[in-house]
Image 1 (cartoon, one colour):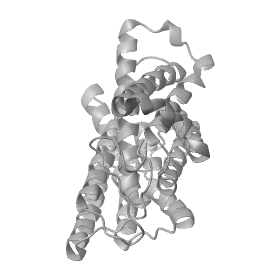
Image 2 (image 1 turned 45 degrees about the horizontal axis):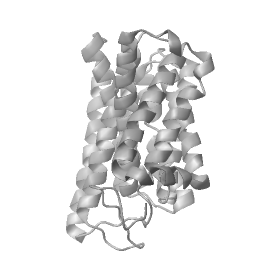
Image 3 (image 1 turned 180 degrees about the vertical axis):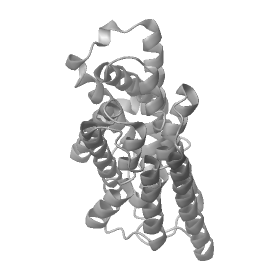
Length: 320
């Protein structure tokens, strides 16, 4: 699908460098990435809710996630759907591979470390994404974005404190997920021609199929299958769909910063559902993270009002 015929309800930015774009595109990006953070923050809740091994969860989460994204693609593209999958290209397949690897690391990390440990490691995404964006995209982060990123890191650090909870394997897996997320952000910005939803659909499917031999996907009960379907449709399908659209409307570090909202939200859902009472450090850290995010968004909005425009990198490609 060409840039002249985008998805219904989605208007991509088709600007050259330095040209102002309508503020609604930026605000749409903020909303989409924020909603994706909420969807992703439910992963800890689902991994606690579903009493299956990580591999079996990954299989069905991937399958249901891929089905959910496929439904969206077909609804928006009809008979042109097949063509979108055939036009992934090398960058698209790279996005698929990195995203699938990140999903596997993410879910397995939650079975080997705590939700808060995973959150604090994920908070390093702004730094990794900013470095990769600077190297490959020549995007220079603003002072307020860097300051807010540092504050977000402090916030999730406060949540974990200096305890001995968690595990080395889980922490390493969480870092693998974090690195994959930062790379995905940069790929989406560097190659806006990637049909992002087909790429997300294939990555979700791949993350499930690659671990099929290690789990017991045919031994699940009807109740388990219901919750696995919710896991895949909400956390995978909704999260990836919202993120891949929203990330294309924001700079890499800003995308990562807004995405850090899932750090305080993830332990919140587990606390509400399973009574895992957060410590005072967790509550204090959540306040710091939220304050950092809202500080930066407010500063950015004030700057745009003064300038009357938004600056962005070119966005010229397929929204498929």
